[in-house]
Length: 192
Image: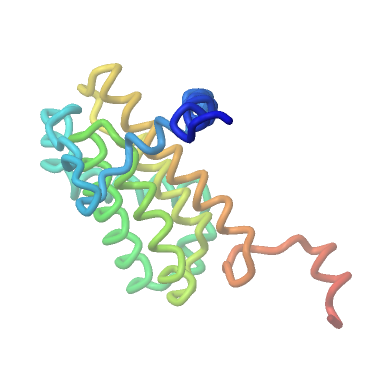
């Protein structure tokens, strides 16, 4: 008969090899989670580009105004769909997006804008704002970004805006979004 200690060793080795064979993406996802209850250090907010974040914060009002103007130039129906109060709300939303973008630049981590994109969708639905209009604001922010940002800083900002835009586009397909529907599908399902 084999002693209990000797029988447990091969099982432990097999378990260790299974743990070592886990995909790298899963290990990266575990390392990037920074929940305080896990005992991990918080995200370093000076690991990215704090100088670029300061530039973006200084020019928040100009960037937000230019982003809204760019969104209205690309889609003139935005000005027709929203009254003056609605456009002011969109301007304030652009300022909030720019603040979140500055946080992303500070830490070189798109997490801050991605989480905001997930959280804010129900509020936009309640206000009657299409998530595609918010995507247009994000594109306007990308176009209005300060020209003196370096290549790495601009790449970090675009990575964050692209991640948030992907979430808004995915969520805009869900029921309740206020974007214009396909006329054929609308006609086919008119009685349903």
